[in-house]
Length: 111
Image (cartoon, rainbow, N blue to C red; front, side, top):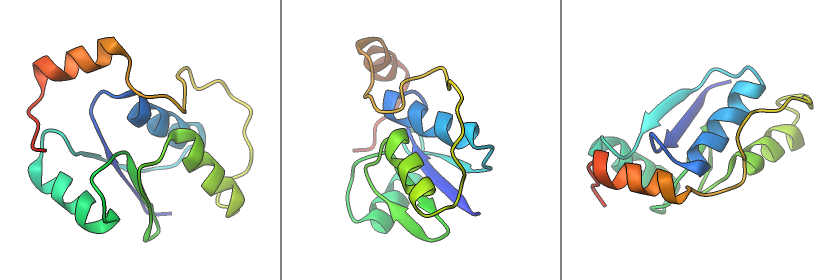
């Protein structure tokens, strides 16, 4: 499976996507859309919208999606089998106030 995950370096939604992909042992390209303008532009062009996370699975773009939704897509399309494992993070939640504060002081935003 070829997976490209357009993610923020530190974000509740992005961390949920990472956790789900790791839970299922899937290799994926973690593409930073905050610190690289070209990556963000590629995500917008491919997904047709500006919100993240976006995950491309074998050419199918899942736009503005949570980790829980990624897992549901993978299961529904029989790309993975159910796994009972605590991933250590919430897979369907946005950034905490602490995460937002960290991003505001340490990242460069292009949008």
